Length: 177
Ligand code: IMP
Ligand code: MG
Image 1 (tube, protein in one colour):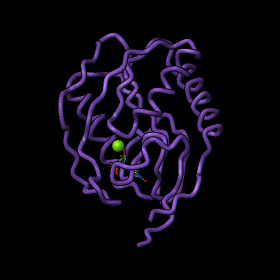
Image 2 (image 1 turned 90 degrees about the vertical axis):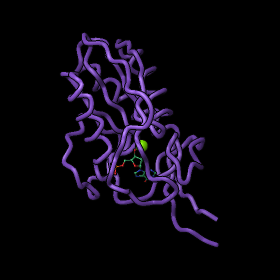
Image 3 (image 1 turned 180 degrees about the vertical axis):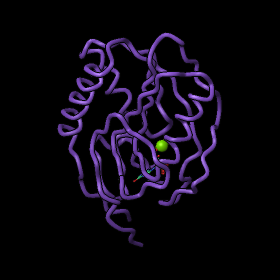
């Protein structure tokens, strides 16, 4: 059995998402292309774009899917694009959104990919940041919560594809038989 302890409640997440959207709206004076990194960002992104709308910034939404952890609690280090490349307009800044920046490999890969394909203005946003785990240097412009080296689930984030539907963020305490 997996033991999950609450880390951030639904209310805490909602309040922080509103603040983040306000921060983004202050920093970005125009509408945005929001690009979500699948799958983990989909719940966060759904709330963030609606909070951005309330903060006066409309967005168009695209996704890109990267290789992920698989069913383990460990990074592989090598990141690849799975599936199609997102459609990006050339007139709006891009906000690249992920669930967690851990080693930094995924977000750095995604940002470099967009740059290499000609996108000039790319801002990055993550719900959770684990700075102690960084392997690749990446500047994250907007961070929801900074956390220690914990394994987190819920609010779109999985452990072996489970727990994405939890409305709160929890930490996986330990594995039991
Ligand atoms: P990075 O490339 O090491 O920065 O990993 C980022 C991706 O790994 C995130 O987008 C998540 O999908 C996954 N990940 C990192 N930490 C966790 C965690 O604590 N729980 C679940 N997935 C995680
Ligand atoms: Mg991910």
